[in-house]
Image (cartoon, rainbow, N blue to C red; front, side, top):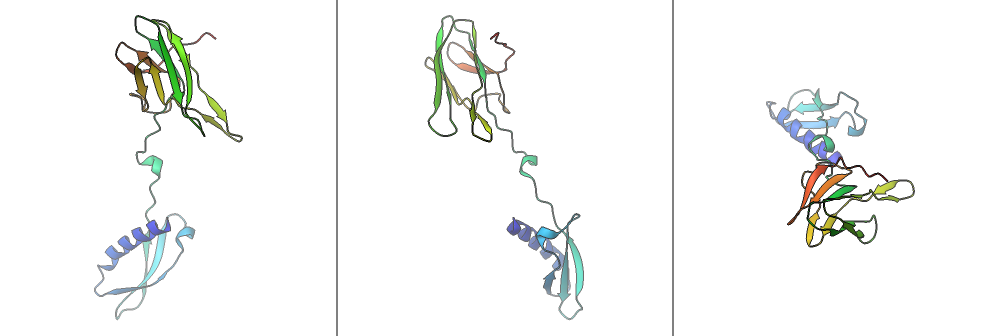
Length: 180
């Protein structure tokens, strides 16, 4: 991080010094970067050849924060609702990665025609915190849909998938409510 500040400082200082009539020599940096208070200024002593030393205060640009510059939220699904829109029953398997180890599969589960099946959220006790397993893939017969799923733009629960004749469609948030 210090290297980034130094690079920015150097670029800014170069533009200030180039306006001087003679080559400049930097003598001291008045404050360490880690101890500068807000508003952030760095006092610099600059001497032009043949002139007396003068101190100028250069503003230090604030660093950009990663989440404020357009990094999207993870598009993950914790639990799902699978709707069988086909004319016959289907067998589906849901795959989730484990925190350490192989892929965990749930199923095969049978879903009758025109019915819903809720795939509940799976959590792992990691000692001092809890990890939630994300759905990586859903396979119904020869049809497969894998993450990242269409229309998912943030972490979601109860995301609906519709199994059609030729594909599995990522629908959106489900209003299906299990009575168990």
